[in-house]
Amino acid sequence: MANKSLLIAGAVCVLIAVASFGIAGIESADGIGELTSIDYMDYVEGPDSSFTYTFSEQGGEGSDGWYVMMNGSYQDNDENGLTDDCEDNSFTVTTNRGNDVTEASSTLTCIYSDDPYEFSDSQFDPNPYDGRIIFGYVCATIDEDTGYDCTEGERYTISSDTELYIFDSDPYYSVLGESAMGLASGFGIGLIGTCCCGLGGILLLIGLLTGGKPTPIPGYMPHQGMQQMGQMPQQGMMPIQGQMPQQVQPQQYTVGDGIDSSSVADTPISVWDSNQ
Image (cartoon, rainbow, N blue to C red; front, side, top):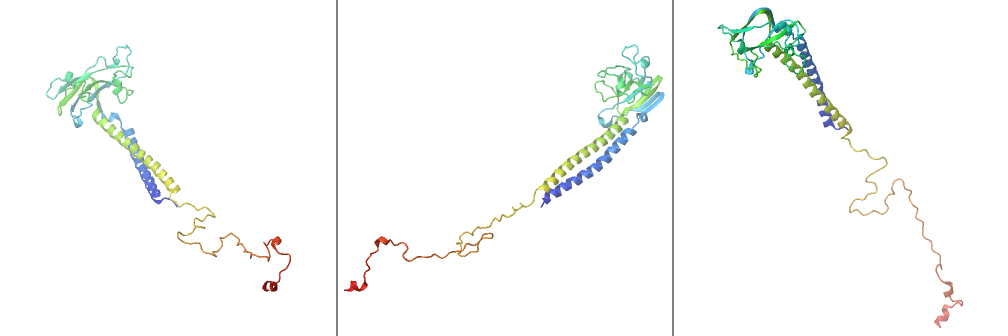
């Protein structure tokens, strides 16, 4: 007989695993669907020569800011460390009061490098092969080393003599992060389901193999031939099954058997002679 407690526990674990796999599949499918549907161009404005935005830090942890882009490709034919198409271009940043804060709130980069360990604008481009290049950043306060000075709620205008595109990175990375979290949670739930499935299988196996009574050995009777403590064996008990009863032969005696003939007198003695 199997161990019912272990079988029940194993079955519960397997059911949890099946449910977890279903939830994990839904979560993962949603996450993958959201990731594949995200198009960074939904967060790009342009082309135009002037754009105005209100600065806001999400959660007070800083902002990824606005990426200043233009038509071009990432290449450095003269090998001077600058992207050729943006070398002679620039932009300005002003507040709603007309103050020029370009130096305090932005950085003109236009940096090119083939070395993956060195800074290059192409590393931050969501699609570096779509015919647009990054050559500057505005109010990217999440990078504390650059020291961007931008005020919460302030309106900033980015303008240039060249047609620009502005990539609003904050909402883009926010949606990207949420989709990635959904995919990660699906994998996490799937991992829990896998553990439950393994545990349930082990419990079911142990439950099937344990919990039964020991099988008696054929022909062996533990109490056979044993006498109860304090009980005297009784005469005339029935013979043990399987033994033939032994027949008791009566003892025969022979007259004169065991008498030494040498000690017997040769001359008979009369009883009458002894009385005279």
